[in-house]
Image 1 (cartoon, rainbow, N blue to C red):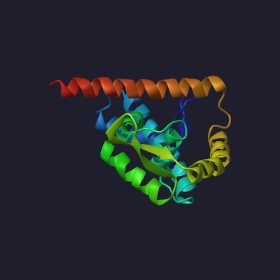
Image 2 (cartoon, rainbow, N blue to C red):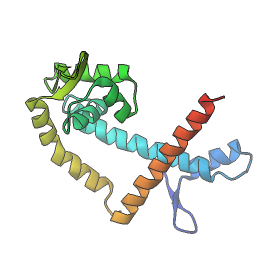
Image 3 (tube, helix red, strand yellow):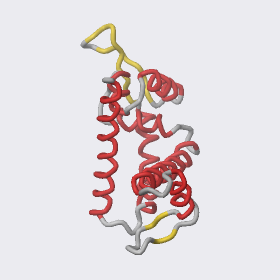
Length: 175
């Protein structure tokens, strides 16, 4: 999605994507498919930016997400996985990475001796504090020119996509 153009209403679009999708749909409306392609392109752009920022500091974007969640409260792997929308197995690997880096530690759950909690360490808090400002500056640059209302609307629309996907997944699982 390199070369972008403007529709008559001044909305951005990708001529390459539109042309490819017009062939795919045999000339039918491409609006939803173009929007999905734009969401994927935006997500890739964000992931590239986050990866650049975290890889230079020795953590993956997934490990960063877990560390941020741990900064507010300790949690078990199952709860971390649910809040991150990934599998417990995935979170176990991310917690292993955070432990090796000294950013998190597993501790016994005082309410359930069979369970383990994950807690951020002082080193993890220091790492997050050092990453906070560059991250805020990068996001400010990425969203430069957006109004508060636009960023709120964008968040809302993206989360509506998430809700619709979850409903669709539940429907498909019920078949």
